[in-house]
Length: 202
Image (cartoon, rainbow, N blue to C red; front, side, top):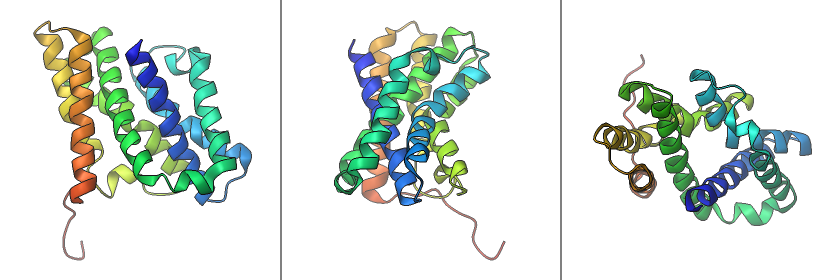
């Protein structure tokens, strides 16, 4: 029940971050709601497509659609107030990244994926929605150009796969993995960590 509740919180917060990006890009109401839903659910859909799970589980549970769409509507009408909560949204986004990554990793393992494949699919599940958001806004995906985001997802995904390898309890291991991802992401924001970029003129 706790994991389910946290998952819906993650859907709502990540949907709100997508909606804020849509508001800044001057999209209309429909565009804001669509971008909120794509950002919140896109990673899970990408995961399920890679694992040949049809229909995608993110679309089967109507509550995901209601929470993400509701977040988009709320941000559309209340965006001046929501924008002031930037630090809280970034923290909640880090929690969402951790939960989505570990959940996607567990799903991949349950479908029989090898450990390295499960880690990659877990990372895709965590960052896929943000990538789709940026592509729809005609931007270079955020995860490819600044800060430690996608790389933060890998340690938690690896912990989940090793936990499964040694038959450790899935629930506590998943929470520990999500906590590691959240911690790395928050430290990256606090310390302004960025992956290196190529020097010179290319």
